[in-house]
Length: 465
Ligand code: NCD
Image (cartoon, rainbow, N blue to C red):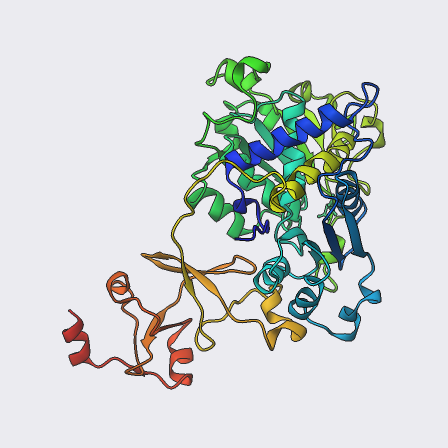
């Protein structure tokens, strides 16, 4: 089966560790002692493979490092760095583009402004697809670079305090990152610019799926006044996991004494204002936080690593470039060995060895009934709407929860109908026993009526019981 990497959730923790081990091997074999982060030379592993890079949004690091990775592996690349030079400019859909490109390449890397575009590409393509950023949704390969950088710095994620600064609403890098942090046992500390807080959808998943507990920051930091500007800490429950075994790494503040009121910040992850994702006329950023040497001079940041996916605009001071706490250029350098490892894995050159049974999921797909309500989802865009099938995962039956497979927004339908009887009911409780592909979900009763369904009568309701 082909392997697509669309969200960080598409990789298990052990697969992530496998990617890191392989990246270590590439660095060991190909870097020079003077530049231990930098890959040089070429291998032959991927010499019979071609990678297509479809970038419908600007990119420097992600595209160049993917291309460099493929070339260093001995493979070849095809690329569209400017969407105006492809048929996308003529209105061609992602689905059609992918069904053409799969004939020319063995793996497709896609960056696109629509949320869920990479999943749509994966649905239509029969070669592996890797998401290089889909709108404000996710950017899983950046997260791999981020976590790998921390591992190379011997920073464990277990109980680490990771502060995320800036545009947490639209920044796709932080969306992939927070899930990974929770999975590897780090505490997530949002410090968003005003009005650009983590989307409710993301914090809900952090709590419900990744079992993080929201705790008031003052309480978490033992009432220490240094932390008054922080609101909440998502305390991770997976505190036994870590990317580096404890014996190989220095202990972190928080680990020394978990009850200590002086726990420091281990990582400060800065992001730029995602101006391209602001709605027309939306004005933000006047009071956007700036992280520079003066900000970082506070006691709590003494041993803090400063990270940034780059590009920076004004939010990260150049005066930190020579500071040993700044890791952002290393993050960018590690993009090559990490993407070499990822490409080798998905192409099956170095297949994943760890196996974990995928959780059972039910795919719900019907053209009538509930639709994804996220206006940024690819399923709403004119060039895609005509052909893209509406698809949801039925992730829970109590309460009934559907997740759009493209943008991953969740929906709680208000009622469901039986296609055979054309009746609907708002009683969703018994769905566990009656669910079948004859069922259609509706957002509300108006939608059910408009689709020609009638409410279930009292006698029918009695019969169900
Ligand atoms: C990020 C992106 O494209 O989301 N850049 C990157 O890939 N390193 C961050 C950003 O553009 O702000």
